[in-house]
Image (cartoon, rainbow, N blue to C red):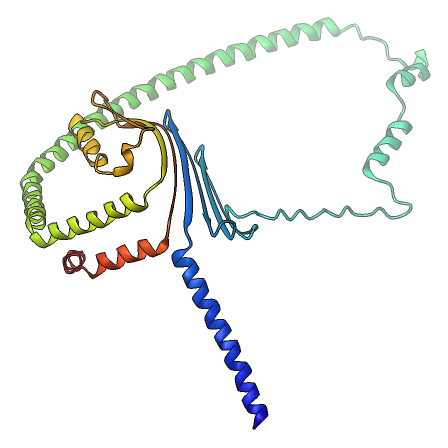
Length: 329
């Protein structure tokens, strides 16, 4: 009996230790601050972004880099690399085994060298052959030369006639291609006119669909519950940013939109953010821009606790207006 009680006591201690570790881990996750730093630069359409995050000092570190269209990310736990993107591909290079030569066998190059050494050179052959063996030059060579010249002239005449035939065929082919092109152009014009007429016919139906969508959007906006849900969610987010937003921020950014009114609306939305009123933050809108662009650099530092994010998320989720808003989707 005493043995059984001692075993149960040991098991109970082990379970309590495991539960204690789990509780400690949960408390660390909720209350240990997560520090972050975001640095970046946008210039001539090229964006460079560097993100560093740390939890419990050196317990967990995260880094992200985006430069020249390439992305890299890494996660370290107690200095040991736990995850990396893109993953390191272990190059497995298998050495190609060369076939071993058998004793007594010669390679291809060695055989070629032996043949070159054994084969006599043409100069040596001429020296070795006696002058008596050399055949005399026949006297009928000039007649043969005249015959070859006449044959060459006949061949030239045949080639000229062939060239004329080819040129005539090319001209005929060009005429046919021009006729086909003219027919295809007329066919394309006919198709485009038909497509334009079809689009004109479909305009009333499209206008009806747009009108229905506008009515739905108006109903959605005029719904008091939707308005209160958006107001509540924005209030929670702005409260988080005000209390637990970045403690250090340095930015020098210029932006522009195609429409000056849109540029002003973006500036109005940004003016709500409290941390944009720091001394080292400069945002310059360009109301004369002909296209959308954003250029500048930024450096943001701060820390936040997960418990605050969790509390805000629970408050937003429990709000009845937000629940009504979510059900519509």
